[in-house]
Image 1 (cartoon, one colour):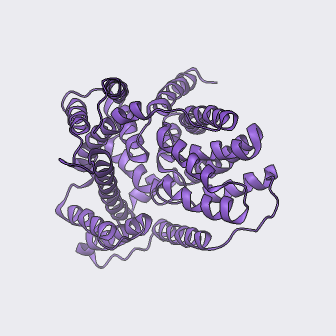
Image 2 (cartoon, rainbow, N blue to C red; image 1 turned 120 degrees about the vertical axis):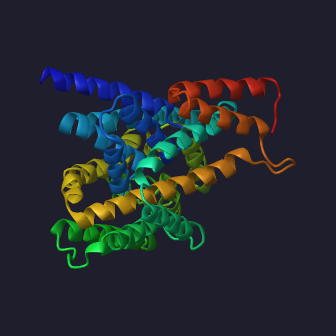
Length: 405
C-alpha cells in the first residue's frame, strides 16, 4: 500500500472513531462535527463541496450522517477510505449498543445515564448552531436561494411535507427559477434527468415500502437470514432521519413477525437516544435481543450495507452534476433547502431540550450551556469533543447537587 494512502487511512480511522464516540445529538449534530473537523480544522475539502455532499446525501436512502462519513472517506482516501471512515464512524455506537444489549438481556434493565445526557444535549445545540452559521453563509448566497430556503421551511412547518419531498420540490423549483435568465437552454443533460429519475423512483419506492406489509411469519425464533434480509430492506429504503426507523420496526418486527414486544421496541428506541453515533445502531440492540451476537451482526450489517453502495455509486457523479448549468442550479437549491431542513430540526431539538412544563417554562441551566457552547464554538472555535465532555461533567455535577429543572 502506498505510504501516503496508509497515512490517510490512519487519519480517517482516528477521526471517525473519535466522532463515533462523541457523536451525540443525531444526524444534524454529527454533520456539524464533521464540518468542523474536515472543512474548518483540516481543510480536506471546501465548504461548497461539503454542502454538495449534504444535498446529495439527503436525496438517497440511508442514515445521512453515516453516508456523509463514507463520502468524506472516499474523497480523502479512495475506496479504502470509504470503508474505513464508514466502519470507524459506526463501530463505537455498535460496540456500545451491543454492550448495553448484553446488560439488558442479562439483567432486564438499562443503565441510567440521564445526568450526563442532560448536559450534553444543550451543548450539541451550540455545536449545530456553529455549523449552521458557517454552512448557511455558503449555501444561501443569493436572495433567490434565501427565498427557496424559506419556502422549504414553510413546506416542512405548515404543510407537514415529508423532508425528502420538500428537498426535491425545493431543488426542482429552484433549478427552474435560477435558470430562467436563459430560457432558450432547456435541461438536456442526461445527468440531470438521471438525478430526477433516481430521486423520484427512490421516493416512490420508500413510500411503497412503508405502506406495504412485509411477509408474515409465525415463527417466534427469527432465522438469521430472514432477520438480516429485513434490515437490508429497511436500510435500502429508509429516507430522512434515522428516527423514521421506528415506524418500520413497529410494523415489521412487532406487528408482522412478532419477534419483538412493544416494550422491547421502546427500550431499543431509548438506547438509540442516549448512545452516540448513528441512531440506526438501534438495529444492533434489536438483533442481539432477538438472536444474540449472530443476530446483532446480521442486523447491523444489513441496515448499514446499502449506504456504502449508494455512496459509492453517487459520489463520482457529483462533479459531473456540478458541471451542468441546470444540475448545478438544482444542487444549489437542494443545498439551501438542506440548510433550511437542518435549521428546522435544530429548532425542534431546541424546543425539546430547553423547555420545561412549569414556570418559567425554560430550563435556565440548559439555556446557559447552549449559549456558552455556541459562543465557544463560533467565536473561539472550541473543539466539539471538549464541549461535549465539559457539558457532560456539568450535567453530572448538577445531578449531584440535586438540581432539577
